[in-house]
Image (cartoon, rainbow, N blue to C red; front, side, top):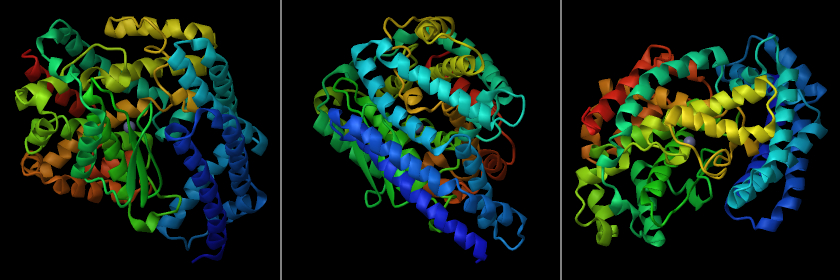
Length: 498
Ligand code: ZN
């Protein structure tokens, strides 16, 4: 191995150790930590973040990166690692270690304030935190910006390389054109599907048992992972042998946990299936949030909401809840879990209106990143957009602007990943169906056939290819929204007899 590269690895490993420690606290804060822990935990997290900053941002690393960029005896993996680290170096170098510490303390506290604000239905509890987070991100993005373009692009690039506002504006216009007329046509027919049986009492302990079965059924490996509970379901991981997911159980909405478990298991499979050669390196883990969402949304929607998926296992669900489902036919269950609802909550949204929720968030982020928006006006802006696009107006901030955790954690530029992920997933799904008989595999209960395809084509590469490269290598073309729109049109025209 190249001597300079070997030296660089020491710094990388130290940084991975620091960020792993930080991630354990993040996981703990969302799952088990008692409420009063946050004041001190946020301090610890700030210090860890500062140490992480110092491990990477120093003259030795700077010199090593400059030298390694000129060397020609690096392997492909080594060269990709240098490229990735250089990007991270520039990202972290935009702020001092002290500022970085302060920011990490702020986001730890802010996530807590968000939860309180949401619970109390009071935006003013969260507003001062949000104001600071936006200001910090604007400053950091401006420092990192290399040209005159939008500073929002700097943040977007962290989640999906090269998907700038120009690309996204076009992408979302195409989605609006394809989805809004279809959603409008369905609006009057929303009541035609019965889902009363999903609003009965579903024992939480039994739900837990069933969701554990479900995770295992789609391929989640419990020797490398755990399931916990949190307000907002998410996936985190330290490496491919320690992947954690959460879900959230509602007594009168069993489908919420069911589909969030399948969704998070989709994220988890991606992480678990990355090749071991990338473990604990810069190339470990999913390549971007968009590709990550393509894997979770693929599992949740294209697979998890299909009748072929449920055919072998629906009787198990009926046996778990005979009092509610004994007389419910599979076809009626499928209609109920696929029905369209012009609702307020993104995480509970159906596949059709889902991207509209994302468009609203994208437009608001673009607005506050590129212009001056008074923080106090954001709830109103949010509500107006819901009225404009979905024809409904949230009655309170918990169902409105406070519903998502992302901004409180400093994740600005993340939301477009959800819509991109759905579009990537449709394109991958189209290709997969050309190569294997997906429906037959599902009817046979042979999930491994599907997950093996995903592993071979996508998962194993970790971060060694970005979204654009993966799309090209797997499907032979760049992002094409045609597949997603065709899939939605066909599915919902059939479901609502259009
Ligand atoms: Zn997700």
